[in-house]
Amino acid sequence: MDFASNLRQMLWARIGENKDFANRKRMADALGIDPSQLNRFMDGERGLSVESLGRILDGLGARLVLPGEAAPEAAREVCFVAARAAGAGKDAPHPAAEDYFAVPLATEAVAARPGSIPQDEILGWVLVWRHHESVRFRSDLVAATIGKGELSMTPTLHPGDIVLVDRADKSPDPAGKIMLVTEPDGGCAVKRVATRAVDGDVELVFYSDNSRDFPPRVYRLNRDYGGELGRAIGGRVVWAWSDMSRK
Image 1 (tube, rainbow, N blue to C red):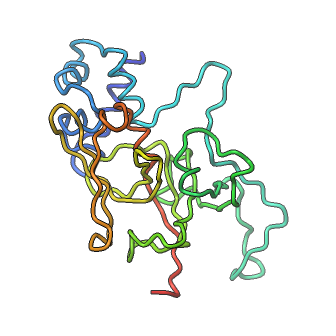
Image 2 (image 1 turned 90 degrees about the vertical axis):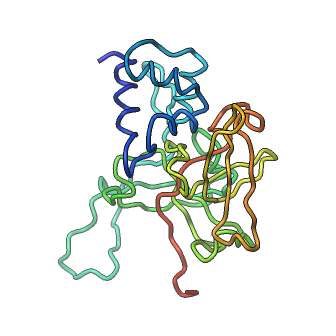
């Protein structure tokens, strides 16, 4: 299968009920491209401009990997050395290393950047069972700590909680996904995201679960981010570790 056909197949797989995009119009709006151009491409009538192709690949979280290069994934394979199992019987089998990812833990600002996490900015490692439904088939994962005093996502998330972010999933559709976002001034936070087409641009709404104290913030994809979705969204939150003793 050639590249264009493969890309069409990937796009079709993300459209439909309970998927990333309800329809092709919503997909085009979220990716910041002309709906008619997307329709003609997906129907096999014509190709894409370089600019539109770039926006689609950015929106899908794609990475360019040249022949002979390794994909820059953040999560690493695990090698257990005399692993100690807690809460299991004496004769219980030890955990299998191939069933886990070691995911780097970083601040929100560091986690939102593309590429590998620099060694000196890794705060620690989080062990993730790779067969869980929220993790399966994902590998560009990073963990981030909700910062001290960050109360905008309470009661869902509290300061000190850890979120697992899939940096390959930057699509804001359907509305309401919890995502790691970057504001135009460089500030990073975990917010819910919604989009809508406005005056030839795409409006990005970053809103909180604690909306009374933290009202929504609204930006434009082209005006504020140069049309690059990856500058606005670092990835989707797919899992969280929360201190249940406070709830």
